[in-house]
Image (cartoon, one colour):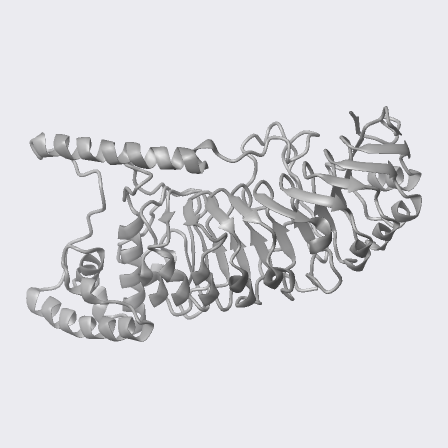
Length: 485
């Protein structure tokens, strides 16, 4: 089974619950070839307190837009009435030139030609470069006015230019949903004469070329500029938990990043009315998409997933996505991790668990959606599943004996459904790796199989859990169940 490149796979979503002191992490450090990890929390399930953030509700969002327009008008009037002596609250001041005017003019002419060629090569509009008041024009002056210009290669100067455009575009830039923002939390090195590779959040390869930008929880605002496409070897970014605004006017960027492997933008203002933007079809190398806690709405576009067969990890929790999974998504050969809890998805589980679908599936979390019907016997053909979470969903019927074919199953959450009947002993005996089994809030009868009790009790997982409705199904507290309902 394919494994996502990096520092070990974590079988948990990128965004963690807000109240970590009150909930146990739903899943940790669980990969196709194992792993460990130490979560924070008590014995309750990760799902219990996971909620969409109130300000990401579309109704609240629309109301906020109207309020911000009014505030913006009032603010403009107040600003015009002021004396102009206040400290600027928007943008950043770049260092002045440290070369003479003739050298700067020569550098400007040469570098402008370089940039025009790079922009044309990407099919990008370069007209803003000649505007000295634009982010692009200011970044140009920063690069050509530095004594470093003559010391660096053409590629290095282009990357410094693109980095400064990004900095200006996301530093204290208000947008439709944030009328007043503060500076970056961390900006060590940015716009200094230090190597780009030591600027805060920048990752470089052995050739000192920028390959990644890792700036989570850094108060980035504004919108991502197209100039990110000028990083020829750019393959990953993490801008989670910021204030970045990306709607259809800015999605062209995704058509210009064919080498990007990891896109992490949880908890921003990422907007799409087709589940994920159609422009994602340009992400020809993408392996990880993580967009939880945003404003994704509507049904998935059936065509997009068919154009990104490299995708391994898809995460879009706590959004407003509707409808079923498209067939193209279910046929993806490498898709291993799917985290889409708390959306408005509607589909019978049998439509997902069809033989031939999702051949690499390892983790599937569907909680808080309308996932209906019985658990189909075809689930047995998904023998690679190790983590399955379908709670608060609407499942009915018994656990099929074919679940015994899930010999790698380690964590199973099925609570708060309408499941019924006894827990099949034959299936339970095959779950020798089981460490989490939560099935309360159903209509199970009989006794908890002893093999489940022993598997969970013998697990070295710090948060091994076994929960059930002990009035309906025999499960002695302490020697079997860790919690009764």
